[in-house]
Length: 179
Length: 179
Image (cartoon, rainbow over all chains, first blue to last red):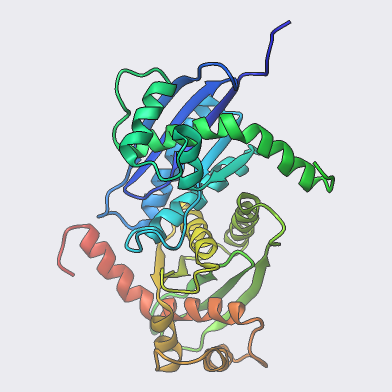
């Protein structure tokens, strides 16, 4: 019998209108994790917002089709972020959440601080530190570029490491039981 | 031959997570407009955000199926709005934009000031004034309740009155021509 848990495949999404990071990580807590794929969905600012969101939705749906993840992790967006782009980021995050939930996939959201703390040990790590830790955790040759790609992988890693416990708690709460 | 333009049916959406106003108005510029239907989609704060957004998406899709509007008008969301609910409102607005654009429907966004100015003549009209004007414009017996329902109708009215011209300008710009 296999020692340890079941392999879990998580799709992480760092939502954005201009650049939406998307990455898939596979693994078991306590063993080395594996990079499955990573990329950035891009849309042009010259295209109407509704059409940009459709492009992002199609991109996310294509990844969900191709990689059939067990769960999806999306960065939680805050009103205090850079206000010039925050509305587009929030709209893109809504698209990501719906794309996953529509398929019945478990969806978790993590704050940037939670992700930084999970992968680097500090909630105040900078982008370079997050990129370096993602590189080390996934045994890559170089940090994924741009930062949105690294952030998407960091979200997926965070969920593999933290999501299992949280998902069980959420399920217990939803079922009206004390976890 | 009919005098005047073609009848246009517009679906207006006042996005929100807890209450999402949705209404359909039909008419021709310069003639009395008609209320087709109005309601409010509601989701509970006790449900996970992703599932609430799926409920809103299903609700909007059902209205698009039932009423086959020619265009959709959605309120534009700003970062300076009430910050405790603004992220959910932005996410719901993204869902509304995508639901329309995915079907190839023209989508317009209007600021609250544009809507108030269109229906009441003042960009600073309060909710009661907007409700009263919607009641008068659509020849209703009483203002639609709650305010989200009246706002959705006001958006649809604004688009019937202003959207035609704007859509032609947008199309000309998109085609690289000076309108």
